[in-house]
Structure formats: structure tokens, C-alpha cells
Length: 146
Image 1: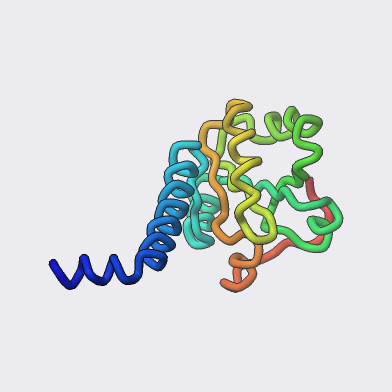
Image 2: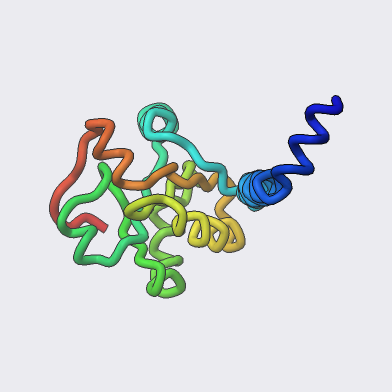
């Protein structure tokens, strides 16, 4: 115990940095958990798509969406959320799981929270976004869909 305390005293800046990083990481995870928009990996997203008819929601700009997107994805650029919300409600009338994604993942949580506030009950965020999906070798659709 003496050695541990001596280590902390002589390396207080390192210990402080570790505590700050841990606090930031744990706080972020708790925030995502309590927001109701849980991060899921590509394998879980595929299971939800195949077993529960989940809908992918692509929040990237429409030009990027047109170049390639997840199978059957609904294009919902963040700036057009309010205008397209009714269209999404009609297409997802039976309240399937919604899996929101962007290029890398973190911004999708913001749109996911807005969808939860709009009344969708099962909203998920694709962890690490489109890059993780493509990196895993999962299928893509090309062309305009929704």
C-alpha cells in the first residue's frame, strides 16, 4: 500500500490524466445508455435487419447516400430531419427497430435522440458507422432509394 501511495504522489499528473479519461469515457457511455440510443455493432445490426425488419437510417448528405448506403436505407440528412420525419413515420408505421448511421458513428447518436423524442421506440446507433460496416465486408446498396 505504501508503494502505491508513493507512486501516486510521484506521478500525480499521470494519475489525474487517467482519472479524467476514465470519467470522460464512463460519462459518455452512461449518456448514450440513458438517452435510449444504444450503440450496436454490424453483426447485431444485421440480425435486427434480418429477424425484425429493422430499417437503416442514413444521416449522411444525400450525395454520399447516392454513392452507396446500407441495404434499404432511408436517407435522412440531419438538416432535413423535420421535413422527412412524416415520411419516415409512414414507412416505419409498424415501429421496426431503426438503426441510425453516419460515416464514422458518433454523430448518429444526436439524430437517434431526436428520433426517440419524435416517438420512435427502438432506436440504435451503428457503432463506428459506415466504415465499420464496409470494413466487415457487409453488403451495400448503390443508387437512390429513399
